[in-house]
Length: 500
Image 1 (tube, rainbow, N blue to C red):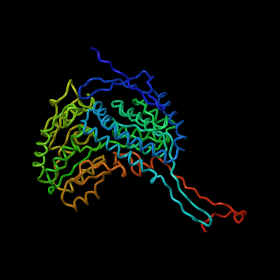
Image 2: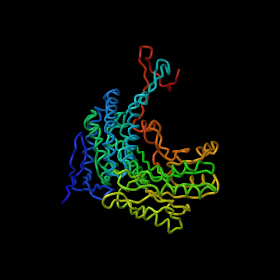
Image 3: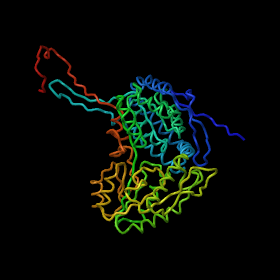
Image 4: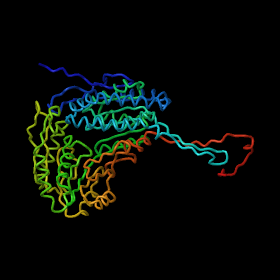
């Protein structure tokens, strides 16, 4: 019996729109390997239609009172809470992560929605009475206009929600380009915005590939670009976006280290290394992929991690497995090739996830949890971002060697230290050259009222996501100097004005 495969389109000006470019991609269930749908890939003209809708909606939304805007955001939050399980199931089907992980993604995205509900406090300006004689000065923050978000496959809901709640609450209009591998979550959220009362054209979704990305980067009416993805693409987005006069925040790749000192609780460290290394099949920009064991604890720590890793169950995310598949066949093959390269370079394969027997129907894109020991800094399994369930153990003799290893890495996204020594932890947080740091916390993703982002090749641009920096990114400031004239202010004076 032939399966019926539908086509996923776009969301423009408050309605679902079928693609007209004639170009399509495949949307696959990673747990089974089956193609579930085709997704329309937008042409530059279709991107232009979405931007035009956002531009047309902007004046009305910008001039909508702040109170009314936040009421819409509140309603979106309530609807999202009530239907979170529905969105999580959609994420699991297209991405592959287990249901509990998908539910956690939705919850963390909702935190930014909740932060945006309180945006009036962050949009208020300052006022100085009589800054000069009879002169008052006040500041305001105003929205930019139509803004674009280009989001990755690994967090189909959370990463877009890092940006669009803040952008919308601040008075901007949005064009979201999700990953074509996982398009349905974005369209689901577009319908939720309509149900919450958001005016047509304020939130638009175009599915597509590089054609759509370049069209957004080059469109004169797009005022800013927010991007999360690999470092080479982040650099491209930043360079092309700024070249075309846009504000750009481009969050790139990572190689996150977890340093374990000899005084650490090794059971706790082993638990957290497994959680942070293999959650979401390692497809997290904040995943721990490099564990740095300091001193004589390495053998014991590796054994504890091995015991926990061998007990994990890989399979379909809807069946209660601990870890699901990778997102595509190409991702599966890429991760497997890195394990092979690590082994060939001299790393010891302690737990081998290649050829894992997964609890799933069909031929899904599975690689089981993999543990490599005796990894050295020159190996590709260490230097490259693998983005899969591969945890590499590097052995060093001292704290100073561990710190030097972390700081020498080209990435600076997240890191963690496990220790019971407060002085060592305090020294580490001060000396490490990384943007987000955990102390006995393996995945230090900040709360929504702080800002998310790394250093070095993990960030292009100078603005992090959400929090106060996010509000400032989606607004620009004005300072207004006011004097109400009376007859005493008359006369001609060509001297330079001074305060007095």
